Structures are given as structure tokens and as C-alpha cells.
Amino acid sequence: MEKYKLTINGKHIEAVRGMTVLEAANSAGIYIPTLCADPDLEPYGSCRLCVVEIEGMRGLPTSCTTPVTEGMVVHTETPAVTAVRKMAVELLIADHPADCLTCTKNQNCELQKVANYLGIKELRFPKTTRKYEIDTSNPFFDIDRNKCILCARCVRTCNEITCVGAIDLAFRGNDTKVATFGDKTLFDSICQSCGECMVRCPTGALALKEVNNYTHEVKTTCPYCGVGCSMILGVRNNKVVSVKGNREGASNQGKLCVKGRFGIPEFVNSPERLTTPLIKKNGKLEKASWDEAIRLIASKFSNYQPEEVAVVSSSRATNEANYITQKFARSALGTNNVDNCARV
Image (cartoon, rainbow, N blue to C red):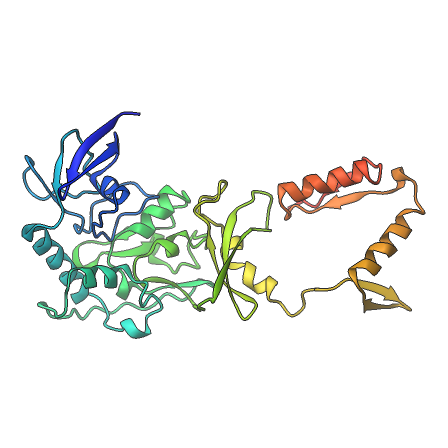
């Protein structure tokens, strides 16, 4: 693996060939503000916030699209760089609603973070008067184009990661906006409601309909299919209130489908969910302990020959759980009659 030596803000670092200046800076713990860059997406360079000065290179190149070279000397905090960044953010804020305190992304907004980092305390440009109707047609999240900064993260996510292409940048100039084919609602488009666009939106343009803060997190595996996507559940008052993909998950690397991202809290928190075994007594189901239920099952099994017993596993359990199930059927019960419920 070929490595290059370069200098960023006087700090000597090593970077792997093929890295961009932004990636090299991030790996060395050097912060460069950006709003359009995402580690899961191809370099884009539209927000112009990650511009830097590179000795021997004309102008202010975007660090997210500039590959590192041997001996490169980079400066990320010069007066010229800061001036360009402030101008870009001030123009974005002039075209952005001023409802930060009531926005669902308050304190988690990347535009807010960059503005604070650059020390922007007042506006030099008048606010725009454009007004878009909020699209609330999707059952899980809304799209508020008034808060959109046209970073195209959502568009690129839908194209590069999910390969659905439900949205794109439509129209031109001051009328440019994120839109579906024919400018229809999200519900009437080919959107699969996976939410990958939403989790990458740097502002509140794409946001959950209902946001609940959690007190602690629990790492687990999605139960919906056998892929084994790793997820992190946000828990509050012993209830699941949020779900996000775990970037360290080997099979999903932080990504989730619509079932995993939005389906967990509803059925886990459902009041109709069974939390204790039930045994039918005198024609009615009554609550029982696990020991009582297991003893009853074992006694019932003892009345049958192995070839008369069958075990049905769950396609929503993990691969490991299903392996144990078939092992139990063959080794403990002595039957090869093993099936699963994967029929849809």
C-alpha cells in the first residue's frame, strides 16, 4: 500500500495513495468544514466549504475532490479560505428559515455547526422570500425544501447507495430543488422509504415526523430477515424510541431498509405483544412461567416418535439462532424434519 507524506497546517502526516486531502485531514484529526461530503458517497465539491490553499497550486481547490500527492503542503485556515467559507455559509443562511429552536435538527444541524465554527453572528444579506409546501406524504419522514441547502447528499444517496433514483435536482437557477419524477409527492414516487437520504441530510430538510430523544443506547441485530443488519436502538423509559444503523455492522455498514429503520419501535412497543408463555387450560389461554411451558412441551414431545416431530425455524431470526434450531432438531429431538417460514 503506497503512502504519501504531506503537511497540513504544519503537521506532518502520512496518507494512503488515492485519499483526498479532506480524508487525509480527517484521519489526522484536522477539522475541515463541509456540508456536501459524506464518507459513503463519491466526492462532489458543491458546497465550497472545504476549500484549502495548497502551495504551488492556483486558486482554492476543494479538499474533498483533490487527491493527495507526495510532499503536498496544505493550509486550511488562511484569511482567503475563511473569507470564502463565510461568504458561502452566509448565502446559505440568507436562504434558510430562522426557526432553529423548533427545528428537529436543532443542535444536530451541520449548517448550524459550521456557522458556529466560522463565528458567524450576523447576516450581511437579506433573507429570501421563497416558500415551498412541506411534503408530508411519506408515512415516516417529511421533506421541507425550505430548509434544503442543495448539497445533493440525498440525491446521491438514492443513486449511489440504494440505486433507486427516486429523487434528483430539478429545474434551474433559483428554482432548483430536490424533486421526484414529475415533481410528484414522495408517496407517489418510486421512493422505498428506506430513510438513507434522511440520515445523511445535514439540515432539517429531511426529518422524522416524530423525534424522541433517548436516555441510553443498545446495540442489537435486526430481527426482520436473516441478513443480520447491526443496529443501535435508542431507549427511553424502557421503550425503543429511535433506531439507527451501526456503521461497524459487517453486513450493513450502517445502512438499513424501511423495516429495520422504521418498523422496530411499533411492534416492539406494541401493547399486544406477548411477554409471557400462554397455556390453554379449560379452553382458555392462561399465563404461565417459562419452566412450566417448557416442561409441558417436553412431556408432549415424549409421546411422539422422532419422525413424527417437525421443527419450523424463523426467517426473521439470526443465522446463528437458526443454526442452533436445526442442530437442536437433529441432535436433541432426532428428527430431520426441519423447515422455515421464508415464504414471502
